[in-house]
Length: 101
Image (tube, rainbow, N blue to C red):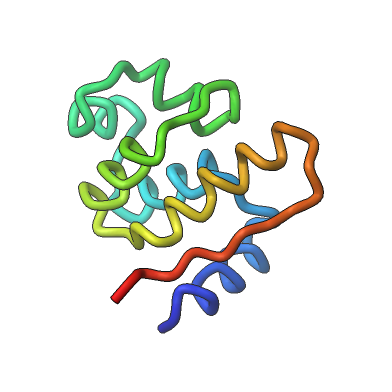
């Protein structure tokens, strides 16, 4: 399945995606509680909760680390982090992410 198809499926089921929602989906797909996810990522449970609720934003590096640990698409994680930043800035842009050759 392509990254574009995966994003479309997620957005149809859950609504507009953000990195926080991506994290929640990844956590649920791995049958993890916020506390278990926090231990895996060496973070606090509150930090996981804040990310999922959109109260804390993450770096691209942390997004990739989370995607790898959860066996999720790094490309999608980067996409959501960058688009969250653009949305927070009040800009009307979206980016697409492609892995370089």
